[in-house]
Image 1 (spheres, one colour):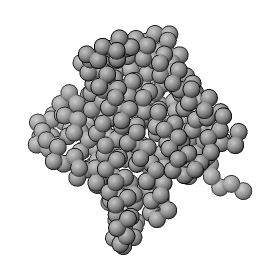
Image 2 (image 1 turned 90 degrees about the horizontal axis):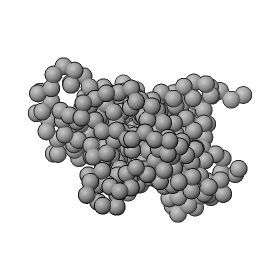
Image 3 (image 1 turned 90 degrees about the vertical axis):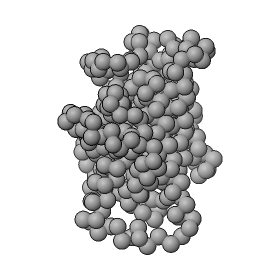
Image 4 (image 1 turned 180 degrees about the vertical axis):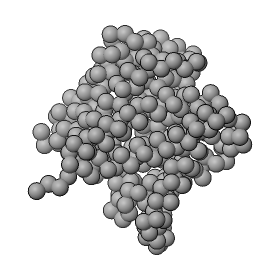
Length: 302
């Protein structure tokens, strides 16, 4: 009898999708008071501190202390650095684009990861997944149809932002590949605690930590919430994979850009740019989601 509870797993996946969908909107609001690198440092620091406290209570830190292999240490440092690059590139790209565009582009991650899996792990790639890849690219073209002039002229920060978010998606693939190898030695909680701490150390020299004292109570609370969302979303995502099939989780997570698109219609933050909503952009977003589901959620043998 299967002891996993699909309904709980799907609920946790849905919570993850909502948190990841709303997070870029929250980050844009925070970046009106703090620079991107400072925000990223506090996200890593808060999430890393909370997760390390959890590991200390559980007594799981001792296993990490026993690391002796230089190869393992290098893999941990590289994976942590790639995750830091993922966060840093994404938030800088977000500051130059929009929350909707950022989450749409990040849907490239599962596709790129599966393509990398063909090369790194010699994994198969089904015809359905190739079709899903094509559907995603068609969707991206339709979603950004109204921004094509800006891409061609290269005179807008928006173009640079799109490139940075794309680079963020690529760096996440490198991190995910190393994470997959490291999970053979450590739990996901242990690796993420290490990665959060590495990310915090990388962004510490770039962060203006003194600017935190200039925030009012609401601004300080938003920073804390951003750090907690980083941690809670990770916990919900990891637990959802335990409770139900990865294919179902991926299908729910793929809804993230649509949730962002919907949320932006109800959010009014001064100075926040948003994507022009047209029939083409809505269809494009839906195609990206469908393509993402086909690429990452469907069984490879189908």
